[in-house]
Length: 174
Ligand code: CO
Image 1 (cartoon, rainbow, N blue to C red):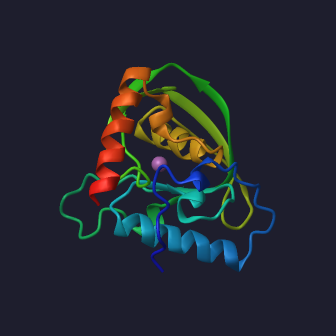
Image 2: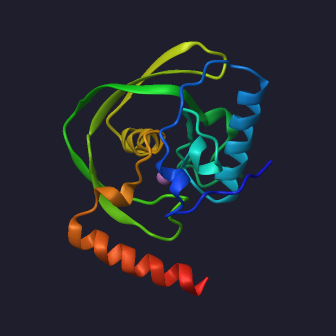
């Protein structure tokens, strides 16, 4: 089921999400709904708080580069991370980011180039993943959501002011 996405500056996006304790059917339903919601909005990642669930759950699905496939984000390629913790990080990189909670806005953000993340999968098994590619950026963006942080908060003072002005105007128009 596609769920409604919480849009900036909704205060719910500032909540610190809670650790998941039971890896049950409700968690699996949430993960399945998050996948459908992310695909419906053409996103590459989604945190549970973006669908109004304050649990430390996120998904990422980096689209395949193969243009011939019918669907470039197959479900089996979805990285489902429960209670993720960044345990190693290094380097820095600037990359243009967007967010389903700030639809239509994209801006360069500085992140670590490499991260290693420990997390649990949907069945409660402990996993580790590392990346120095786009996935590294996506994981940092989504983990930030679990701590109530949105990428626009990482913009410089001037860019942030410009964004806030633009965003207010856009919200008024819609
Ligand atoms: Co986001």
